[in-house]
Image (cartoon, rainbow, N blue to C red; front, side, top):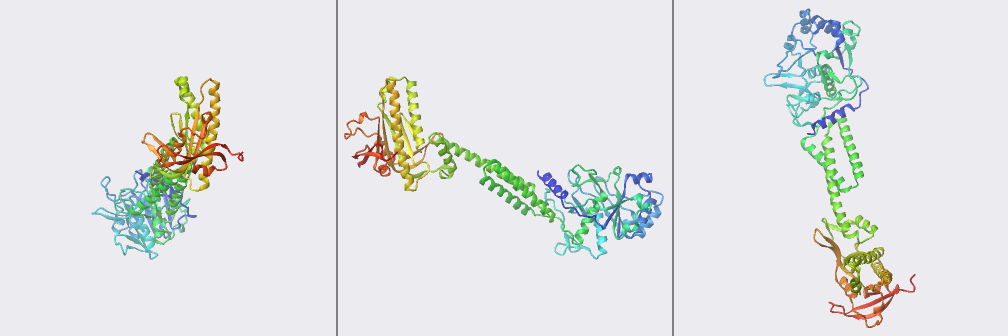
Length: 611
């Protein structure tokens, strides 16, 4: 599925490869264009014209002449003249077409065929028509042949003592000089189950503004080209005229430039140039990773994408990170290509993006669910600043995807109304609910303003905690929570006085508030079902605070019924607020459900030393 994308990336790397400053000096093209055909007045060329062209080129003493024209028939006049040249010229290489089920075979010139001076010129376009691979050998069990390009290159290099031999370690492989040419395999590079018949190699085109010197046939025949231009060169003769239909799509056949198609002769020239560069140690064949190495390479980038998805959750930061990593991966693939290695880039990039996006999306959803849970538990009962802080430090609250239960020291506050029944009897149900909502809203605001967390409402009672949800580990923190709790109770007392004034103005009975506070160790966590959870605290400290709130009338205070609010605290809380508020020692009190007595204190107001 990704093959076409990977091949497109391969083409892009080839097109953007650094260019050679000059043409390949060892190869010369003699082209037969539409202009040359019109000058001759016919196609195919006569044997006489072709003989003249070969004679003129051979005067320049080229090493090899490659004739990329099918010549399996006579085109009079001049047939004997042409045969004589074929017979007496050992450096002419002709072309044949290898047998195929659809077209059959096209033999080379008979004399050249007998002398073994023929190579097949078959091309191997990929699906879509682009030529990225070249054939070196073909064998169908009946016929075996060497390619036109390899025959030309081998004959040229042999004069420099560079021979084509079997590889010492793998006899099925061919060596050109000291360099082994590994055959293309069906899954090399970005290919998947490609046709790997015969002995193939990936073509590394000679990248230059003008890869090869070229001269028109008419100019060569007219003597306008000095014969020295062909000296010691490989000279290829072939057709560039569009009417002959010997044109191919290459990796360079994209963009806005003219001449999108390349002639077959020039394709052979690129293959010959590549083989010469390999044989003279100027270049190595293009290497590819094994299937196992490709899988490891892709897995590494999938893992990197996973790490990005796990570590980065901000959308734009993720996008920028993925763009940067994709660009880096593309650069690695590009520079590897320049170093002679085709490393896949598209599957790793997709692996990076898919794994990173999936994990980032999944974790974002988990975070969204966690935030929703935390906000459902806390946002209505704490200030927005505390809610944001809870989210920022969410790792303290979650363990294995569930809300963590913690043991911590808090100051628990219970508040309840006394004398509420007379009001309830005087108000309609809607008026009663409205007044209760006004009361609860006012008290909850006071609690949050004093850094407390509203734990629960039940009836006309309120439970709050000071010191949650963040565990307090230092004594100054615990002391500050206790002081906040007592200051909150005094502020609630002032608020109930104001609410009673409103009741008196409406000729309604007033109410009295009871508040109990106690500082101690509790267990904090969520209780309830998956559909309805509540963050709360449980423990002995909570029970004592509740019992202090519900403690009956105190004989030591005969005017207790005249107070708007009674605030009772335990010994542990008193130790943290001593000197800050005025308190009255109530002595040991027997609390409901407690076997032992508890020392209780009544908070009367702020200390005179406090502002």
